[in-house]
Image 1 (cartoon, rainbow, N blue to C red):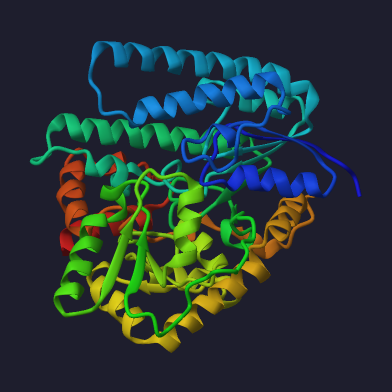
Image 2 (image 1 turned 120 degrees about the vertical axis):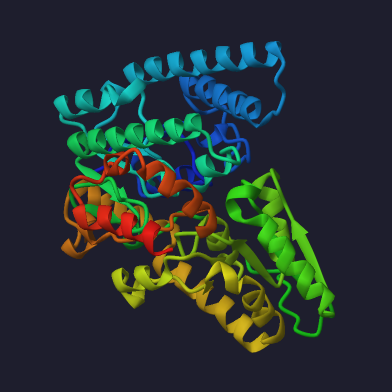
Amino acid sequence: MKSFRIFIGVVEIAGYYGNLAFALREQGHLVTVAGASGHVFEYEGQHSSNPFIIRIYDALLKALALKQLSTSKSINHLVRKKLLEFLTSLTRVVLFLWALPKHEVFILGFGSSFLPKGFDLPILKLLNKRLICNIAHGSEARPPYINGGPLESLNDPITKGDLHTIKRATKIIKIRCSKIEKYADIVVGAPLTSHFLEKPFINIFHLGLTFKSQSASNINNNALIKNIRILHCPSNPAVKGTSLIRNAIASLKDKGYPIEFIELIGKPNTTVLKELRLCDFVVDQAYSDFPLPGFATEAAWFAKPSVVGGYGWPFLKKLIPNNIFPPSHLCHPAQLEESIEKLIVDIPYRQDLGNKAQIFVKENWSLQKTADRYLQLINGDFPRNWWAIPCQINYLQGCGVSEKKLLKVLPQLLQEGKDVLQLKDKPSLEKAFIDFCISK
């Protein structure tokens, strides 16, 4: 088997790329990963064995992330943040020049690139580097007008400035997706977020997520324990629907259920893993467009089932074969309380679902199997059924936002004309958004 020189970066998403690098190294490949040890949630510790440029870059990333999490509006804070942004961008340029002659394969995640506006992508193409771009994580590809992150920050009532911001962000992401499609050898996408892609992409469900297997010792599966321990770990409470989840838990407590609700926000991954061992099940989020997101996948390794709310499950089940559709308790956001109640009272169902989730990630999304599939992408010898067709996408409700909020934003946005949707290549999807606003 040929040994590849692989660069992975330049950001980390929930430990995905650090774990992928680990698995590829285990198979004898020379792998450089940038960003994995610079994540604020500490998915991978800082390594003194990393090249100096990687250590500098990761340290800057972490410092910048901490600044971005701060709510301070002082001049000193803003100046330091801008300085860190400049130094991080400058270091990316140096990193690119360093990595270019040393690697033949580049795996870039979350729509990231070394140079501003993806100017490095045509250079990689020109130099015949194998380029795989993963834009399946969510907001890097999802249209901003159905993306909870941008929408939750809007004023009430919505201003013209808000609409301009959404319109501009939409155009930027469309341009980014088009550039990635133009220069990448392989684009990895998700069926419910790839509205702006125009060419076939690799369906992320065929690759899987990358989490190291966890020991199953000391796991709380004692059905006789009085309190039900429910875990929720929102990276962004507004986007994850945490207020809706809290209300559901409060209502269930009022009904007399002995619930111990554990909510972790901004905690290191080691703390999350400790709590996963102790809980009975997890509530991932209220408005997801992925049936087993990162946190729920981690829970699955401990045989802990997940409640995942969202609007797109009927549509997604038509696109994803049953054998690669991950097990979780999927529900409409309006059914969140009854779904949590189901896992409280139906102990055999809860334990069976947790066991099925664990079997699924072991057999389908193990670290080595996911790494093997990336190697198939690198070699170009993957099954043809891994391809997904963008014209099949007809999902409207997005992620991280309620339908009620969407219906406040979309009609106002569409007053500027349907071109704001950036869906000229998909007239049926464009019409579906317009009809969605009218019908509701």
